[in-house]
Length: 444
Image 1 (cartoon, rainbow, N blue to C red):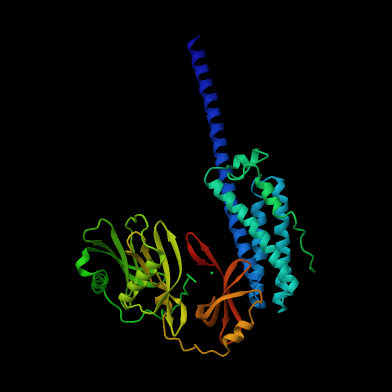
Image 2: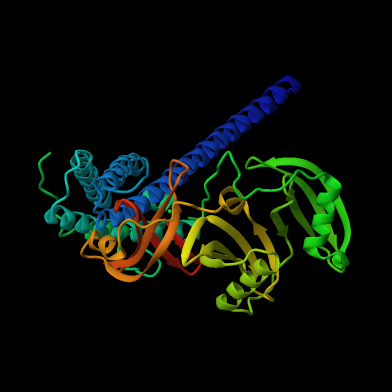
């Protein structure tokens, strides 16, 4: 072969190889982009279906037309969004048609009832029963999608499986197709015939619990030593003045004697209050119970001057439990006055504290006057609510105000709720769904 021919042939081979690799790279990129699209759409779908189930649960016990209007409007909106994401995922027609049909029915029915509630019309018993039916089916759909999410995340099922195979089953149900499972949820669903959560504190411009004079950095440093114990502090590094959640604070990193891990701590400029403290040490195997952790958290708060704190909800993660404690006065839980405490379950060490809610809201309240009795408040509740306990509470409202309420904990169709009836007006202020999982107890 002549030299020129050899060079030309070599160049041609390289060009073909390059084009092939480029084509492969494009396909690979396209596949990754497609997978990312599916992942995102499915994540959004699961979130919206979970929301729909929870809001439907709220709708079946609410007797307030104002609250019903808000809840039903949210169901209508989330149902429409769920349909959009459902259509972006490579499910076959077997499950998709029935699911989208169901979500359309939920959307239409919720919209119709929301208009009725907006006009201050009470929902009928039949309409409440229809909402119960929708809730049961939404719960089934939620469970199926959550199981599919788990198996996709674990790699048991892939998007290729869902796109290319006519039959895909859950790992523990080898003979049951996923889409048949979705479809079977709605086998006896015929549609409807009709005519047409407080771990969040309120942020206030006037920080009611942030009292005292401004302090300088040196005073703040002494506050750190006092809080952690002067004998335990080996070194303190200043990180300057920061503004977190509108609270100006001095930030420090502290080296504790005999420990490798360092502690981050923030002291408010005004008053010298502890805003946040974080100890990032590794936590070993859990050895203490939830009850012991609650007790240790309460003892810690009391030792730091935070008395009358009542545990409310908690989350467990990697052998650490974060417990919300709210201030309690005269048997009234002040939910806005919240302090979060992180406790290591290996030995009960306090690993963190965050007092934003308390510093924002803690104050003497002069509006704690009852104008209706608890019996009168109870009489306004949905008759299907099985009351488990009752008490009094101050809760934050969306308008940055507060309401003094009777708090009723109850159950409907296996789901637990908190219903808040205003102790002065008798109006239903809020309904929260209680979620109990292996990871903790939360509200939505």
